[in-house]
Amino acid sequence: MSKRQFFSTVGILLLILVAVNIAVAIATRNTVPRRVMARAREFPRATVVGLGNSLMGAGFIEAPFNRGMGLEPSTGAVNLALGASSPVEQLLLLRYAVRNQIHPQLLLYGFYDFQLTDPVAMSTADLMGNRAILYYLEPEYGRTFYHLPLHDGIEFEIMRRFPMAVGRGAVWAKVELLRREISQQGMPEETSNRFGRARDFSLLEASNTAEFIGQCNFSVNRGLVPAVQEIIRQGKAAGAKIVFIEMPMPPSHLQLFYDTAAWELYSAHVREQLGQAGVTFLDASRWFGDASSFADSLHLTEASGLKFSERLGELLRGFNLITAPQEIPAEKDKPK
Image (cartoon, rainbow, N blue to C red; front, side, top):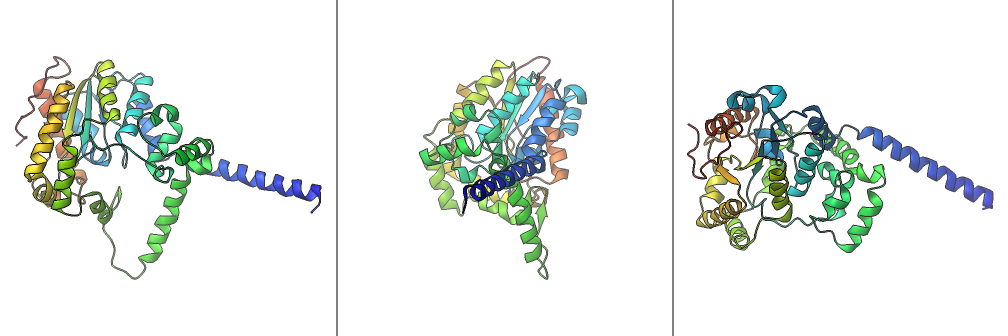
């Protein structure tokens, strides 16, 4: 091969790579994390900010919450919960909201199981889908709150500069949806909801009670992870009262896991940690005792989300946290 042929080939390959990067950048302009970021820009006068993963995304609905709380939509709540996210991404979204002039008077953080104490360790293989936000929203700052192995850390620094690497999950998701659609030809239709295939969420639970008890016993000596501590610190610095909400769980989850003595000990440990941090704890895990209130093994249905949000607003309004801030008693009875 002559030099001219070699450089022509290299030039063509570079042009292809540039074209692919541009195409992926255009195709991923409206991913879920970017839509959540857009909501922060759209509601600069919001006085209530909701954070968490998809449980908060499904359960916390602004309109009924505002109605229950007695807030106007323009100055009410904005839900910045991000599905399949860790406290690190949630911290970055809080910081993004504050930078976009939101001054929350109330910060609501929804969680379940061991989310507050599980160390955040990842590989670059995990930074796909919604977690791709770690590539482009304060990537260097975010890295201080989770661990990447040395090899993955090097990969991260390279990949975050190329849209085709950052957005690979969004592209693969389209391929996976097509694959599932083809595989379902002639098969019984699978139950799905806005977050994905319903049966996939059972994989996020412990496989049995003994495993869950073991996790409780292991986690009862852990403190709040640094990203959670920083959410609390920065929320207070922004002037917000902070309420951590143990999100509603289906009866099966309660019976298998939360009714154990080990969970009682772990939950008491978490309450103590939050109390020491000056945070209000609200246990809403048993607010819905009917399995039909849940779309899958974790998420509330849309109708239940409406009820949950209005009840939550009414409860918080009863304590008048915004106009006359005060603490909610940790043992407050559930709404009837």
